[in-house]
Length: 240
Image (tube, rainbow, N blue to C red; front, side):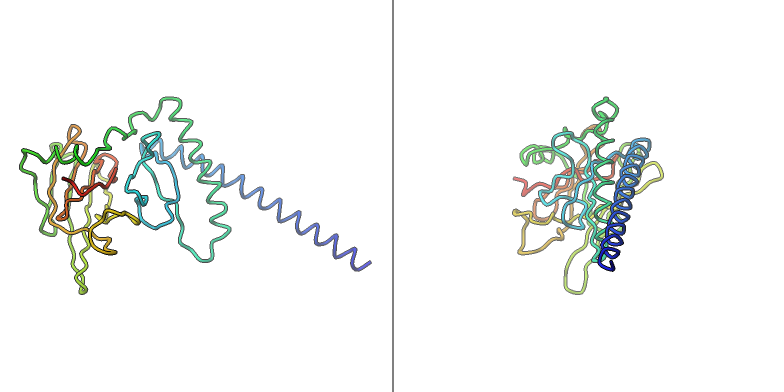
């Protein structure tokens, strides 16, 4: 009799856990679709994808989805005690992406496609050919682009171990984005053994009707930056 009661109790507990998980998963999907609708309303649609790193760029250095041209958002979570959170996060992200792709299929997100900003190394090199680029070298240097539509502030810091940390703050319309000028993980062409941080100074040119900033570092690697979105479209190099 005791065994039967324990078996029944165990079944009830398992059923309750299953119902709770199903409810939480459904709730996460609702949240994901709501978050996507909010991102679209704010003009910040992204496709969520786990890069298996805390960086904002995938290992290949391409910050947009090649098929749709939409920007990518890293959803990797580094947390030792978040197994349930990660599980429901996957359901939330899947629903978020579904809503974004629905809007894209309906023709509502075409203006956010950035595939045309992807460039080969030769195409990037041609942008620097025959022009005198601006140079970002001193900490706090500012570039004003598009008649003041975008302000680019360069920051440079050298740690005691001689590691360089370089980043940009892209400001537009009262909002700002911080972009680290680091090489993507597993980027096989990066100079220096194991060095993630790039070296300045940086040469800068503008393209795409003053909506793109292209930076070339001291080792000839380039960052193609979409200014309205405040994001890195790609990292490429070395530039011939």
